[in-house]
Length: 317
Image (cartoon, rainbow, N blue to C red):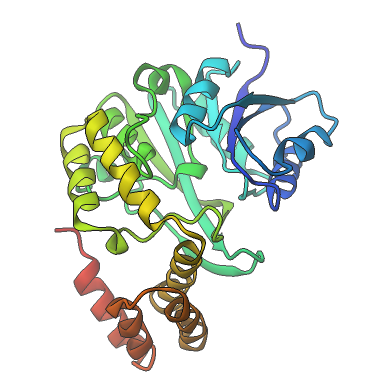
């Protein structure tokens, strides 16, 4: 039997710039009965040293070779002592009541297997960018979402380990291992998104997931097929990795970061001045991308028109 009520599962790869703040946000939780299980996925920076600088018996550090986030999460699922697992990333910040709020929900509603929440998104410097509420809140709404819409912010979820461990994170679903998992679990039990904002998700060039629209068509086709069927082959996984590595250079990731900030300051938190500032940086770093220039042009449009255009082109098809 477990002697802790919640395992906070944190994979970490070269997270030295932010992991101390992430760890402290977990230690500051109003809910105290947890273990913080950190899987160091072959970091080459000072991630492990920073973790060891904390002297709290609830922190457990596990070292492994660099195998990717899905493999790190699967290792954590095998080692977790609690049935309830709270996912968390090494560059994010848990708000103080996060664990308490989700723990009480899951214990009061045993029929639910996953609960997520809303989140604030911040930039690399910790500045507020926008607040995101997942597309579906209730179990019925989540089950009706198109397969292409991810129902949860991954770092916000708390789930029942026994259900997730049965399926595990698919190691070939590079960059969407969580989305594929939710598709596989969707009809295994109830799911819910709390309206509360329970964490801050940090956008930063080191860990940014590139906007899918900037990925090659082959990437999007493989991903959509995996989400539609609930499965992905190792050959498709190798192809995804090849496509990701081709774009995974420092200027490309930094450009993707500034491009994403520009979009969010235009669509989600209308601030055309900040949108233009960030898209200008993206244009200077990226190869020619017509979408960056469209953001620049649209930043001069009035807010209602910008939102109408966004809603027109962002609707799932």
